Amino acid sequence: MFAWLFHRISGLFLILLFGIKIFTGFFLYTKDKKPDWAILLHRQPAVDILIFVLLTFHVSYGLKAILYDLGIRKEKLLFWSSTLLGGVTSLLLIALYLRAT
Image (cartoon, rainbow, N blue to C red):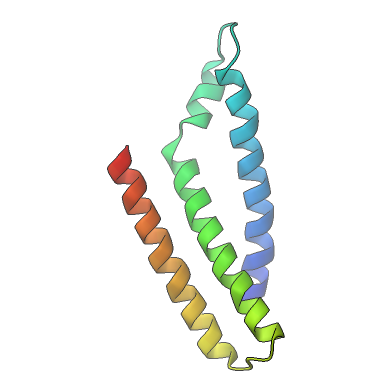
């Protein structure tokens, strides 16, 4: 139940966060004075890290749902393996991101 609910909510938050990134990115390419709030929000590392975490868990729980629909009925194993996959992948992406910045 948790994976299903998290998958739906993380999808909504990803739409919102990608929308914010795209909207604030438009301000970076204007020739007029750039608003400080847009630059601050677009270059916020917390937003990028949240996108990484939500995206990796959204993908791993989506794969869990696909495998369950295909007939693999070991739901606890699928949950824990997808949680482990999402956690390890998001930690690796965060480490790469922090190393690059």
